[in-house]
Length: 250
Ligand SMILES: Nc1ncnc2c1ncn2[C@@H]1O[C@H](COP(=O)(O)OP(=O)(O)O)[C@@H](O)[C@H]1O
Ligand SMILES: CC(C)(COP(=O)(O)O)[C@@H](O)C(=O)NCCC(=O)O
Ligand SMILES: [K+]
Image (cartoon, rainbow, N blue to C red; front, side, top):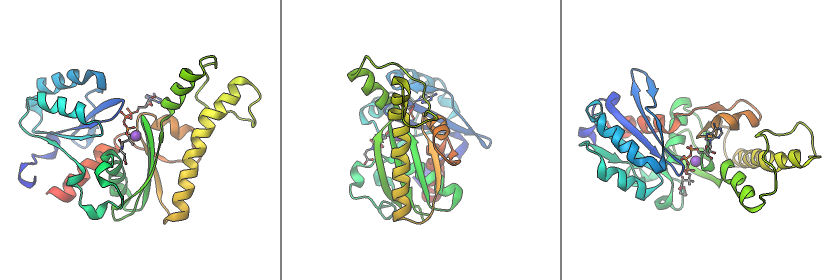
């Protein structure tokens, strides 16, 4: 890929997740998000890119949804499109027993965090699923947790216990829940926070100290219910891809 990377400010990056497609590019030193396209509107995204194809020398895609990715790639009218896969990652950076089935969004989010701190990190990616992953300071991905995202948990209760009320997305002040709504808020948001803290404690027992980063669609909200002051970084995956390309393909 060495010879085909254009100047980095002309790369359009796509992060294709289970709920949405995120697009971003770097203008001067800042990230710009042209829009956040719903996955059912992949055609809107394709049209947007094809309308702006003169602005970008290249499209770099990181995805966990193969058929959507293929449909997008097939319709892009831009010469240079590169889908990064696990095969592009040096195998000594993947301390994972099933690299073939690793979601590389997890690797790149961690990569972005280590690149910023030069220290070990745990990255919480709160999207459709929520992952809590550890990466050593030498960029080796060590694995972690894949759990249902908060939207899935809410939807599961709506679908299977439709008589329960809708509630505020906050953890109650007092334990235990003494009303339907506070009991439910403990069960949804208290439990979600406890699961993540449990995973953080296990990482602490197993590994060296780390900095905590949060990304994904629910990042801002999640930081409001977790203790401490984790770093919220909405663009972490894009930052990870950019650093990775600089480190490994230039
Ligand atoms: N403003 C918001 N506050 C909290 N959660 C949100 C908000 N907007 C979207 N979400 C949640 O973010 C999740 C999707 O995040 P996203 O990072 O786009 O997922 P994916 O990477 O799987 O496509 C969904 O669970 C959705 O409920
Ligand atoms: C865990 C994920 C579903 C998260 O994707 P997202 O919720 O961001 O759409 C994705 O990284 C994935 O499909 N992973 C494959 C399994 C693995 O990482 O081992
Ligand atoms: K995720």
